[in-house]
Length: 159
Image 1: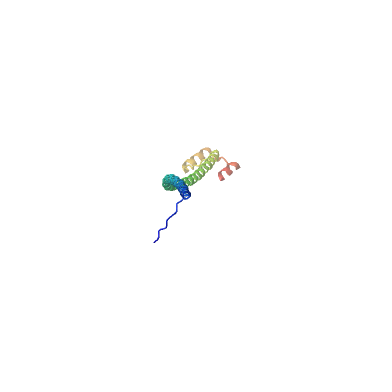
Image 2: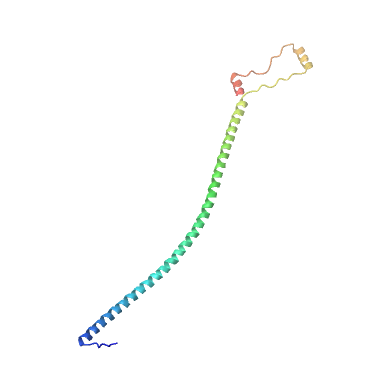
């Protein structure tokens, strides 16, 4: 193998030195940019970790609140049904009570009407001996003491 000799001139040396400086400058800037990118990545990584933790906490809260909401809904449903049953019972009792009050009013009205009507006393029949004794003593025919009812009184009794 042949070794070639490289001619080095002063112009060549300065060009090489200049290009070395440029390469070094670019390398330095490149390393600086890479360091800045790593710093940004580390900051983003910390933010991702924080938000991932917050995300997990929110997921757990959602599970907790969903379970709690389910229990409250079940309880509320039972209470609404019970209230509906009580409302129905109240209406039924109120209707029956109103019927009772109406019946009591009707009964009272009837009793008041009947208490104003004079009811004839039942006739008593004396024994035959007493009747004969009285008849012989007075020898006058007896009139009935039973009062006659007016037409209004007859109507009230019929009602």
